Length: 319
Image (cartoon, rainbow, N blue to C red):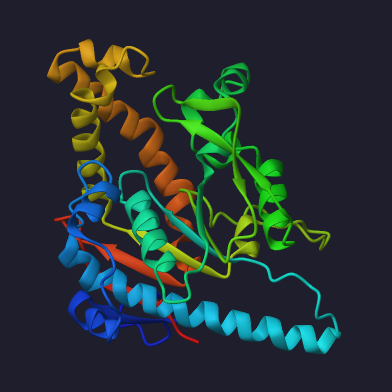
């Protein structure tokens, strides 16, 4: 039984074509310009004004409803506990999916749309990249070829960060990652100070881990999420997008002498493509099959992309 098949009667999801989904925008206004969307999208990502109108405005409206419901529940709990001085905790949105599938673009576009609601909520965006173990530690533990796998992250730091956010702590620090040097930046942090909404993006944020047999409570990252989104596509498409992005970076960012991947810009096109294929097969594909794809069904909303890198189908978990 495939619960993500639109024809499966036992599926916990409702399925919509992109055209059907676009109608749920209703009167949600477009608050982004074409130039802003171009700035927000990632390399090789074709998201444009039409795609934002077609997919993202409906998402913004849906998430607005969820945030409002969460705020109402918070006020009711204040009355229940007779604790009117309790600080409201941020609404956390988790975004998961494979490398090269478009998570970063989705996260950045949503951040801007949500921040431009009439109520002007404070919206922050944090990625899990900063919580990767430093390269020095990964090398010492023979984990460089597992970078991005669950065991390459500082899970304790991830849980402390999200726990701090959900406890309404002030000035919670998130480590910062450099895609140029391919490493965590020592001593550099992003300060998150009680936003109304936090978008938390990363390939393995829905990873549940192993449940202890003795029944002890073991927190997972997704335990702190109020809403979870998974960006999905066929494996063959993600493979194509990954190779295309790598080859494009070879002509751009990799040419910077400070880049960790600068050496690849010096190779012939065939040699560079062979390297990219090896990285895909030995690292990213393995991570997708073993860790990322199995978490898809834990999402509240699944965006299914087609060959043109645009959303073709939306699956929304039933209430």
